[in-house]
Each structure stands twice: as structure tokens, then as C-alpha cells.
Image (cartoon, rainbow, N blue to C red; front, top):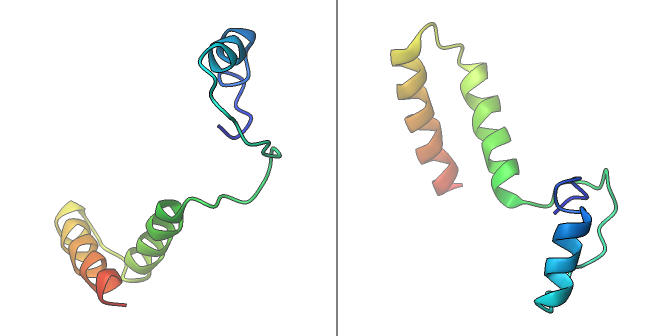
Amino acid sequence: MNNDPKHTSKVVAKWLKDNKVKVLEWPSQSPNLNPIEHLWAELKKRVRARRPTNLTPLHQLCQEEWGKLHST
């Protein structure tokens, strides 16, 4: 929930407590441990390095680099 205000409101806290949902303490500003975020960042870095000039090559490069990510 990353300490987002909409997740830490009294209403949400009450709902979580009433529904017996266990929530881990998580410091704000903590490193993002979500693997998909790292994957998107890597894809973006690889595509940006190849400098697409418009939408068509961008789409093609995204597909090519995505395929390479799965094989590494």
C-alpha cells in the first residue's frame, strides 16, 4: 500500500481491521520491490537506447526488446 494516503485513511484502516486483514508495516520512501516495475524500467532503457523516431518503430522495438527480456 506504500503509505499512500488513500490506503491509510481511517475508513480503510477500519475496513482492514473489521475484515481481519493483516498489513505489513512498510516505510514510506522504501525501494520498490515490485519486479514488474524493474522489468518496465529495463524495457524502457533498452528501447530508448535504440532511439525510435515515431510510433511504428517504437512498437516494433518494444516487441523486439520484450522478446529479448524473456530469453535473458
